[in-house]
Length: 250
Image (cartoon, rainbow, N blue to C red; front, side, top):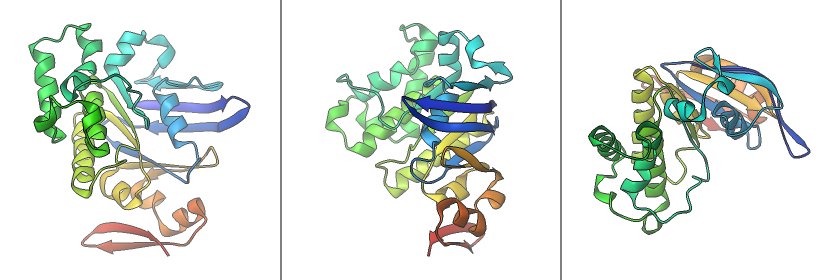
């Protein structure tokens, strides 16, 4: 699990996060929700050691992130950023193989290649393995980046808006994969704007507003009409169809 305690983050002159204490439990999918600019991406980046908190501490399985060597942490945790962070001209297979580098020191063996092949199949990319990234659609590139994170993470998978550019079928596939990863014992955290998808696939929800923790807990507690109305400052309807929670602004 990942524990965040009293996390403050300041970027330039601007304070972004104000004393957030929260948890990404092992074996569960945690959805990070909240208005634009609430601090969701920054909190995920702090959890993945991509930004350094000005105050507070992040622990992975009870151990401070600062206590891990970078190569050790890279094997344990993977972070998908919104921008992807990839500018080189690579094909899909080579990109996904980069996720295995912390495990194989840049020399992928049979087990690494098998992990890559499995991730390509899980993300419906096997037919695109030799295609260059700049020849793909936005959704195909997004799935390739998610596949790279999948083959890297042993204990924690942090995904910042992974559903960007995805059609309905592939959004469903990605969230199903997130649940499968959580079922292996990993802590999975996902920044989401689609609250109906969050309700369908998450076990645990962290709601942020103005850089502060607004609510944390099970889906039924956090994704209620009253709670979401206060979070987004608009009227929200929560309906139930065949046992599924459907969330819409009204």
